[in-house]
Image (cartoon, rainbow, N blue to C red; front, top):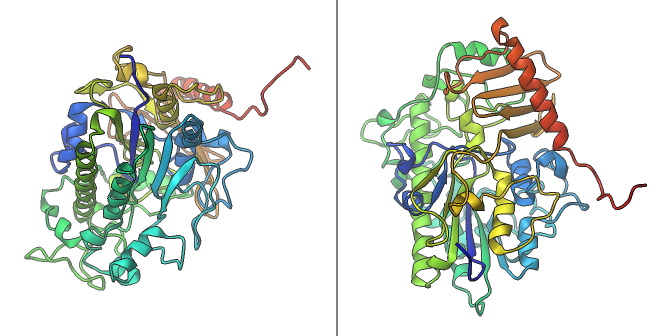
Length: 490
């Protein structure tokens, strides 16, 4: 499939969306007809993994095509993106002639109380919104958009019924993306990086969307009583929540919706009604439904502007959400499938295969070299990702892409102990090493895909664990930053 011109790229990246939230990929509770359409028209990578379960290192990784540790961006809250850094894939594409635009969050550095400082990102069009709650006087384009509609951002985001859909950050992202798509470029290709904040906490979808999902019909999380003991053994390891039973995940937390009263009305924030995992799932799927509706708007814009056949649409997320699995909510230093495995879908009519399920192990850092190869731009040697284009175009089998995937957590949150950990996952096993701790995790994902049976301390698995620890260590060393390019023998 030879390309007659570099395609446009509509890159939609949500925040904290699990892999198992797409209707066409097996979730009967989700309502995602527009994303389902992308699955039917393209390639869905069903085993795609982020390189960190935390926002900033994950985004630094997929924007650079390198592991976060190699880019020296290991956690949230950094002062800046390193000045001596490899250029982002968007800068490389801009240098090759692409018109690049950012809508939503970037999060390569701290956005706490400020607009994060920009790096050499390649974006000509810039509409920034880190989090919907940010009510800065300037620099928050979503807040300006809300104010221009006569609303107060503080009141809107504190509404117990959720932000109205017409004022939602997801809606703003779609509107600004469509504004960028419609701009005249005289045939110049473009890339729109659309970074939607949802389904990130707080789990507060618009009331109209919340009413579409009945908690009683939700499947509930992956949980056994043994999870409480497992998490107790890991309590010294960073995480944003403590383990609780699904019936009461976190009674004090404002980010979790209360169970609805009879009649479907949500209980008020000061109610004493219980917060439970099924209510959380219902709210989470409601947020994803709003995202899907806005994806439909962006696809319609492409079609109306005559650009759909010239545009690669990519749908993914920076990392997942535990959503009650194993008694946990939110994110941190764990590597369960719901937290590190994400949706990844490619659609480009006539240039990317349709109706293909790719079950190979894939990493988000593979995105950068894929975009560059598709655009006809040389992939830098430093990039550690591997282009998916051969699979997308039918030149390589969809069952295999690489032997293993890795995920890193190196003091990624502002936590007292600053945990360091790494995950190594091959075709069958997942190994998690919590560096400096005696505890660890080892799962046979063929026999135990829901990760309930930790084999770390089992006597019969010690030879296997030793072998996997060696492989994980080798992979970590191979992923390190080796410094300046060698130009001579001495």
